[in-house]
Structure formats: structure tokens, C-alpha cells
Length: 386
Image (cartoon, rainbow, N blue to C red; front, side, top):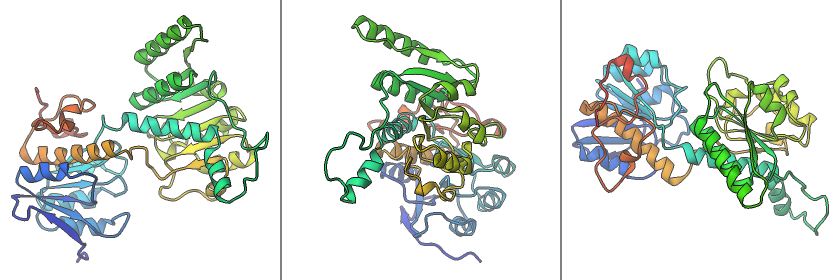
């Protein structure tokens, strides 16, 4: 028998029972569920990561849907438990779903939701922030000041890298990668080299137009280049930001060999997925190359770091906060709730999961659709004509 976990209940007489494994930002997501006759139970257990047993206890004997988190192990055991309780809907409060066994969900007929379309700019902003923090050694300088070590200006004190006129490299020029590239090109007048399996025509047009604008104002224009290989980006770029999906082909995409390809004073940024980088190899490279710097939001064995990384002064490390802006996190909560609600109510699937503005507009009711169900095709769910 699973140990009971503490919960907060909203609308206790609601017809449909929806569980949230964590308190989530904002209240709109709660209100949207309550308005559709849902009893909302929010787990308030003081644990960062809930165990499978904890979540089984939450699901209980009757549960229509669950809103979960990227840190939870949603596989055969949990989907079987949710199915036994009559549940047909689960949504991550995340765009990624590496923690979800989608085949197991398909087996039990459970729709799996995620929250794309709301994280693009905020994730790109953090990647840009890490780029600047690493380039100008901001974290090192902050620690120096707080330690009371500053006793006057010195010519060599925390000398870093100038970004203007340098080359930014992007590996994976999808929505987030392209947004980051635009910020770096327009914000710091950097040239761009990118690698992607698909040509990013919109990004190329943006850089071309911005270069023409600079030239018309008597400034040095910026240029873009689509690399023929990832190694070409690693060799040529001064700042490199990783934005690939995580699969078998991108696991340890950055390893000992690829790190050796990069410039000695390059900056590497990762706000995608931790296992894209071989963290052991990265720690060794940081030790051997003190002017090489890295900015990390994600880690190979999250929430843990490989030994030695925390001691590296040339590493800026933050705890998976790329989506942590108020607007984005509240939007993620809303989308996750609407995924679950939509499946409970029998709504069709929204036609474009990246065009989520209609669901986030608080002045009008959201569309009668599930914003994003990743296994909709496998389950044969209809697509909305809205």
C-alpha cells in the first residue's frame, strides 16, 4: 500500500478528478479546470522529485487525468495505474518528454501532452544571458566582490571576450536556436554560422536584412553562413549554443574530440538537454583550457553534476531555469491543464501546437481543443478545424 501524500484540494465536488503532482505558477490553470467541473488536487509534499510510489498514491482508484513534471518517471507502471483508475490523459508541464515512455502510454490509451510554443523566447534569452555571463566573467567577478577581495582597479582584472564582430555558432536552428541567433546578431552585431539538417530561410533573411541596415548606416555589416557540418561550426565560432533534440544521434554530441576542435577561448552554451554533452570530457577540457568557458542550464545526470564541474571557475551553471520567466511558466501550466481537460472533454487536437496564443489570451475563453498531444496520431485522435 502506497504511503498517502499531502494534497491541496480545489472544487472538492467536481465531476472529474485531475491531479497535479506539483504546485504550478499562477491560478488561471486551476480556474480553467474548475470551470469545467474538475476537482483539482495539487500535491504539496515537500519533495523535489516524487517517486513512482508517491504518484501511484496520488492517482488512487479514480483519476481522470494527471499533470506531471519532467523529473518524474512516466513509464509502464504509472500509465497502468492511471488506466486502472479510469484516466486517459497525462501532460508534462514541459516541452520535452524524455521522461515519458510514449509506447507505454499508447498501450494503455493515454494521451500524452506537452507545452511547446511558449518557451521559445525565454529559453533563447537565458542562452543569451549565459553567453554574456561567460564572455564577461560576470559570476567570477560577482563572487570576487562578495568575498571582499576588490581593493582597486587593475588592467588585467577579469578580462573577458568582446562579442561585437565575433562569430556566433548555432547547432540546431529551430525555433529556439533561431531566436537565440537573432538576439546575438542584432544585440551584439555578431556574424552567424549555423548547422541544421534543414535550411533556416527565415533566419538567413533576417541576418541579411540586418546586415544591409548596418551597411546603410555606415557600419560593418553582419553575415551568415550555413555550415556543411557541425565540426565546421565548432572550428569557426567564438560562441557556440546547442539547440538539438536529444536522441541516439545527439547523445554526447559534444565529447573529447569535438571539444578539441573548438577555439581555445571559445564559449559553449547548453540550454537544450544535458546528455548532449559528455560532462566528464567537458570538466577535463575546462581544467586544461582555463580561457575556454561554458554556460550550462542542463546536466547529464540532472540534478547531479559530474565531479569537478562545480569547482570550475570558467563554468557558469544554473539549475534548469531556461523557461523560468513568470509569463512562460504560467503559460506552461495553462497549456498542460488544457491538454488534460481537452482529452477528458473529448476535444480534438489543436492543428498547430506552436501557435498557442489563443490558449494564453486571458480576455477570451480558450479554444475547445487540446493544445498539444504528442501521441495523437498513434491514438487516432481527431484534429481541430478551428
